[in-house]
Image (cartoon, rainbow, N blue to C red; front, side):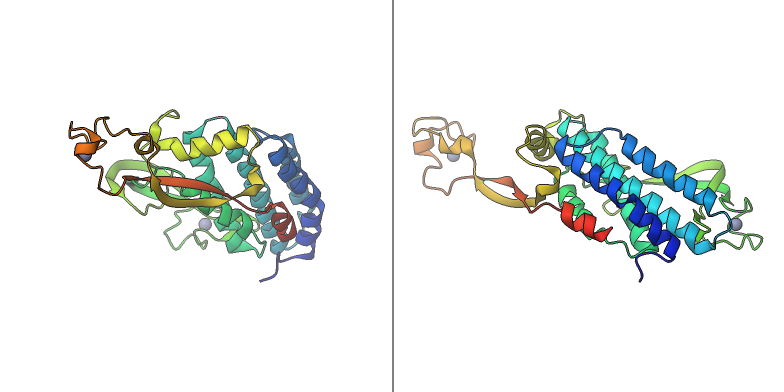
Length: 286
Ligand SMILES: [Zn+2]
Ligand SMILES: [Zn+2]
């Protein structure tokens, strides 16, 4: 697949490349970016391009949609690291899932290479404590097509859900939700944002909290995050246990009378792996 469908789209991509690049650089310099005028500026540039290309073919508008999605991804990416560095772990989970949604769209409608960001975010996802999700179903009177306004499931509407039409995605807008149908607990949900939430100071966020501390103290730059190696190691508590201390197993006996000959207890250990900056790879993909 070509990177983009139209020469005009490629031209726009080269015009926004510097803006994208300087945003990525600022993510490292500032440990993430809360809200960015740079992103707003790039999006308004693309909005202007839509108007300027009013009479251009559909491909140009589809390309502009992809470029908007790409710019939004770079924005969410910056926000994600800022939220981690400022202990907004629960919020950062939603941002992470938004980013995955944007990556899926970019991959589906273009050949822009976002694999460097995707690989990194997949590794980051393993740092979160979420493994149970909710799936919600509702009975809806009808879904209105976002393009033509007719019932998207009827023959009157010629659009297909999830397809692009002159840079606009067709989706069904729920009209008149009659009742909630079910709420299920699942492991592989459609939307991972529907999850049990923890408070930002909860022990479950131990690994992301550690990552956040590395980021806020600049011991780790966002673009150098290479993943997490999960392993086991002897618990530090056990290492400082004296022969006459109460045994770690909770038996109430002295350690020397209890588990001293058994192998030391192991605990999960997460090691943050560094990598060479993904900046170059991301910039090359764009
Ligand atoms: Zn339609
Ligand atoms: Zn024991």
